[in-house]
Length: 156
Image: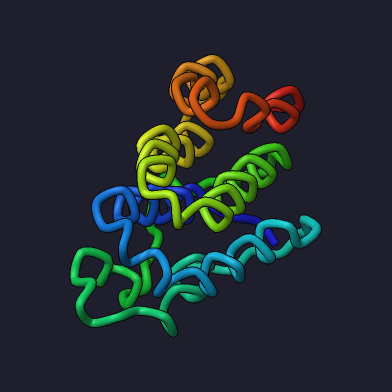
């Protein structure tokens, strides 16, 4: 399955939400597992609208008004494009796997979310995001995981 740029915008909003409300991550951990499985699905010439939102909807908690956008399907009328670069899927998957592995470490989790929240936007909107991504994750790599996104960025 392919993602479109609007799915990346949703992923950006989701990571930003977790950065602001890290204690809420556990509520959405199963949804993140589904998102990772979706991102790891071999890319086919198939496109579903609102892919990320549809995964998140069943997990939505009314207390999380900040992400109530998951309940509304987007109607795409302009500037829609498909994310075809397989490395983008690998990068996003690695980010969410890292989140799931370290959500219990509040300092690490916050820095991870802070370092990666704009990566989905870069993958959707920039032709050559590698340098910007490396700059954004520099502190996280230095403090916690020197190998974070190393292989994925090589293929970007």
